[in-house]
Length: 235
Image (cartoon, rainbow, N blue to C red; front, side, top):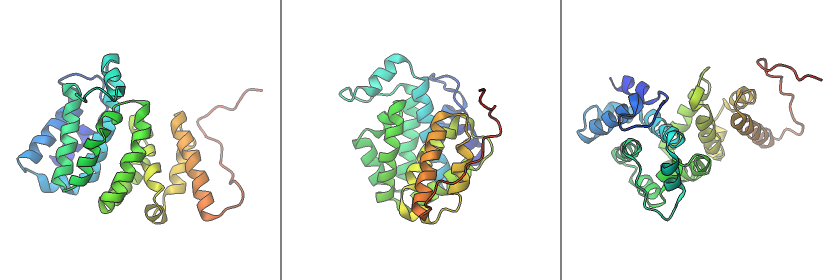
């Protein structure tokens, strides 16, 4: 049941509404499960998967938000009052952090209004480094579990809408020397996404490859094979 709930939470939202479809319904159930402590042990075992899914759904909710809601998100002087559908995701994430005894991370993210910036489209890209830094300083063990989950996600053959947020999050955590030194998948991941159809993924992958080869001390830029799905340029 818990794994099925996770699968629903990882689905792409098509519209933002109070009903919200399967992902938001799954977030509501997750919150209630943790509130009454039912299946909480199983949820804790899958904490990285649930946390990452909630963070990605916040990004998706921000993309689907109305212009009025987006204006509210970027206005840092206005009180943060997300619409009902988005509030469901935030409350589920807060409850999950509380249940995992990550109170410091929960309090810091709330105090700095990181939930607001996770909903802000382009600002989402700048929020992830801050969240990564908070996690590395306050919950290194859980951070390593999340990093491992992101590796598995990125090696999956078809990530679709989760590709850019997963690669963004992974790249930021990879900057931690302790995690980077234990990572045997980095070159495979970065080479895979340098051929992505998404410009942001290609940019992140190129940055990752540069960092990887600088780290291992390679003096020359390696040959990157052409992407098989791209047509050659016309003269």
